[in-house]
Image 1 (tube, rainbow, N blue to C red):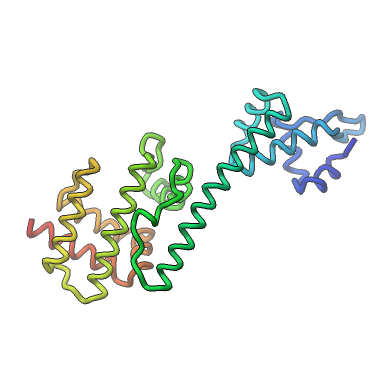
Image 2: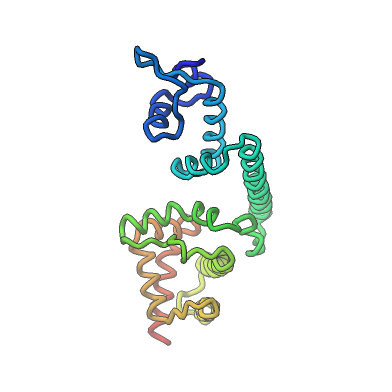
Length: 248
């Protein structure tokens, strides 16, 4: 039998967390002594191991509790967790491969194929993780849930992201080359971008696009995101979008 302190030392789980698991019925002690000490046996240690595997896979505690109730066999639970972890490893390997290719292209000063830039971002969960910071900002400041379940389609997100990268790279290059914001090259780039958005079901007109560009300029998160790509890009995009709308 192990005390809660010994279990904490074995598992690197804090005593406070073990108490919480007890409180919510996720991990019950084998017995509680008359003096109030929690004692755990091997069966409880095995259950704690299952809990920690699921936590590594980012399962919420309520779901972990349900999974452990639905799958009483230890071998079945471990086999299922192994498959989940292998799936995550495969996705991470694809992401590492994409990172390596991105680093290589950056060092060589070459533009990367936009489809290659998003290899590995295939699931809703991965896209939600990638957009978590932006989603949190939008939710806290504007009350809009951009990651609501029915709004996250991995295939569509991949295509939209590739188009956004293509467009923003073109705008950044135009700014870097000193192309005037209302030059025909920039107008054509914007027109092409709006046409692609329309094909994906986002019929964004010139005025709506200009309003979006103004929002990017005024909002700290999005302005900083653009400025980190190219100094002055948020201002350049806004001015170009407004000129495009006026001439439309």
